[in-house]
Structures are given as structure tokens and as C-alpha cells.
Image (tube, rainbow, N blue to C red):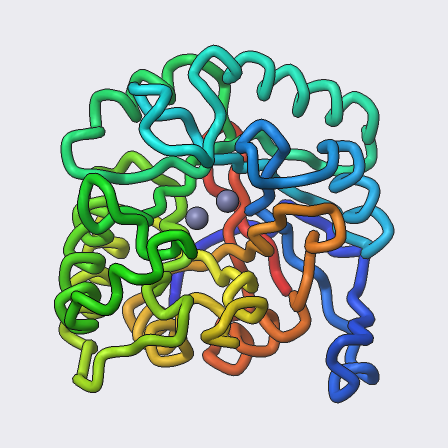
Length: 293
Ligand SMILES: [Zn+2]
Ligand SMILES: [Zn+2]
């Protein structure tokens, strides 16, 4: 990757990860955790201050709350805040920023991308001074979110390659909209361990070309390590292609509880460095900066 940039963060904190003994002797700067939730989404526990406290304990210098954004229709599903709670969410995060003045805390949303939602996403973007949006695809149809454990039986009727194809087509469209600084957990359909027995590289290439063109980053999301797939999202294969194409990265734990903040970041940093990455993105008021790790 070649590019001109300035490092605006002074990296003063280092990670000592007891979850990965092989890394005990290495001192590594801990990248910002840009993917964490709040109880407003109805399936996370712990107040934002507890997440922030955990981040400080770990030596993180920067985090970002990116809770599940409301849909235009409040009863779209059962795992996001209602639109009427959006201002409350922003107030919660602003209060946490005041309570932790030495920790940089970003205000963000994880926004579901479904085709046709573009205007709604623009309306959300205009409502507050967000630092970034994570664009995520969970839904491969209007009613099936591939990561929903309640809908696990759907997989029985589906060909995995067909699911991968629809998923990556949507992810590609998400990147093409230029509505998102970050594209979330890029190979989420592997969550339950089902994978197509076919080469998916053409799907990945098309998505990553769109991400490169739009300037979107992709996130290394460590939640996959806590799921049946036992692997960071995205796979090493996708990350390698991303590096070759010059697509930048961010890091996220996808924490739904304070104890998950920064979880397995040593492994994520090792994966990123092993692929060639030495820096990740930071965002302030939707402008990109860089952080070396
Ligand atoms: Zn969630
Ligand atoms: Zn997600």
C-alpha cells in the first residue's frame, strides 16, 4: 500500500494479551475498538460507561460506539433501537465522552444496508454529528438475517454459495453507495460454520474493488472468534486481497457486553500485520485519519 498520510495519534499504550501467550513478549499498540453496542439495541448488556472503563483498563486510547441503527419502520426486527431512542443514544455517548475525558470516544452507528434504504441512511446521517457509519449486511432478503440464531433452520433450504453470492452482491452495493466509512464483518455468513465448497474469490474481488473505489475501509471484527466459525471476520484470504488492492482496515470487537471490549485484539493485530498492514483508519466527524499499530 502506498499513500501519503500523517499519523495524528501518539501511540502510548501497548497490549499485553493473556489470551494469546505466544504474543506475551511482544509489545503492540492497541488499535481503536470501533464496534461496540449499548443496551438500546435490546440484545447488549452494560452501560456505555462500563465499556469505556473496560477500554481504559485494557490501555485502549480510542473507542467508538456503533449501535444498531433504527430502521425507518420501528418493528422491522427486534434487535435495534427505535427511531425515538436515537437522541437518547447520542446523549448517552456524549455523557460518556464527558465522563472519560482522557479516552477518545467516537459517536457512530452500525447501519444495516438493504437495497432501497439509501435515503433513510442519508436522513440518519443528517441528524447528528457522527464520526463514522459502519455499513453492515445482515439481511440477504427482507426477512432473513444470516447471523440470526433464531433463523438457523433457513440454512437447510439454502445453497451456501447462493447465500454467499446474494450477501456479497449486497455488500458490494453497500460499498458503492459511499454512505459508509467502514464495511462491517465482511464475511458474516460463515458465522455458523457453513461455507460454500467453491471458490468465492470473484465475489470478494468485486466487493473489494467497490470498497477501494469508494474509499471504504473494512473491519477486522473479532466476534467471529466467539462464534461457531472460530475465525475473525473477514478471512485471511479476503484480508490478503484487500491489502493487495489497497483497501484500509479498522478493528472492532463487536462488543455486546463490557467484557468483550477489545477482545482478541492481539490476534487481530497479528492477522493484520501478517497480511502487511501497519496502520488502520480512525474517523472524526467522518474524516479519515491514520493510526499505526
Ligand atoms: Zn448486535
Ligand atoms: Zn453486525
